Each structure stands twice: as structure tokens, then as C-alpha cells.
Length: 145
Image (cartoon, rainbow, N blue to C red; front, side, top):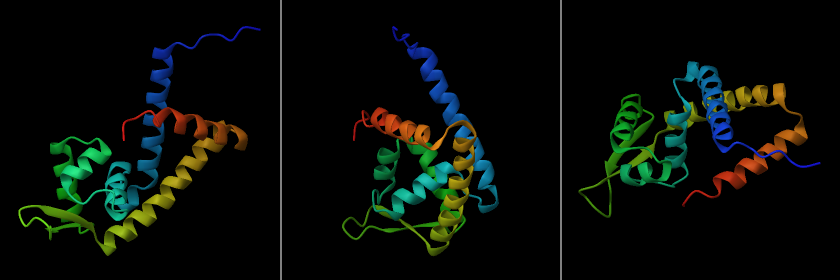
């Protein structure tokens, strides 16, 4: 039996809709923490040391400068991140996660995990979830580092 060809446009739309659904459910679940997925991405990148400056953070996460400044300002105002002068370049600032940021991120991450678990379990069995994870990992591995 011949495998039917996939319409790349239709598949792209499904990937986009899956992202919208997952993001909406995760953000709704974590609403009590005040942390959304975009916040969590920034907090995680800073916590893990993948980015120290706003420029590095924007490049690492693919967020434009104006959006990033707005989000970092908000997280700093809420006491979840802080800026300090960079030791190696006094003209620049590095971004650090605070203890409150660590706590909020941990709480939100558990809520994100629960929401995603519910979505996945409603549609896919354990083997299918594993296969989806492997396929998506291969798909996103194409992105430039």
C-alpha cells in the first residue's frame, strides 16, 4: 500500500495549532503564579547560564529586542530577575534570576507539566507520546544553533 503524501502547508498549520493549544493550556494552568511560557523560557535561560545579557537572551530565544526588553522589565519589576553591571564590561548589564524567580519558575513548571500531561494523555498513548517527542526533537534539531 502506497503512503499518502503529506501536504506541508496543512502539516505546518497543525503544528502551529498544536503550539497554540499547548501554550494556552500551559499559561492557563500556571496563571496563579503569574508566569507564562515566555517568562519561563527567559527565566530558564538565565538560570541555566545560557544567556547573561539581553542581547544573548534575545539571540538564544529568538525574541526581538523590544519584546524582550518589555518582558525583562516586567520580570525585574516583579522581583523575579535583576540586572547588574557586568564585571567584564561596566557599560553592559547582566541578567540574574532571583530566589523569588527560582520559586515562581519551579511552581509554574510543575503546572506546565501537569497541563501538558493532560493534553498528551487525552490524545496519545505512552508509545505515541514517545514517538511524538522523538519526531519533534528531530524536526527542531534543524534549527541553527
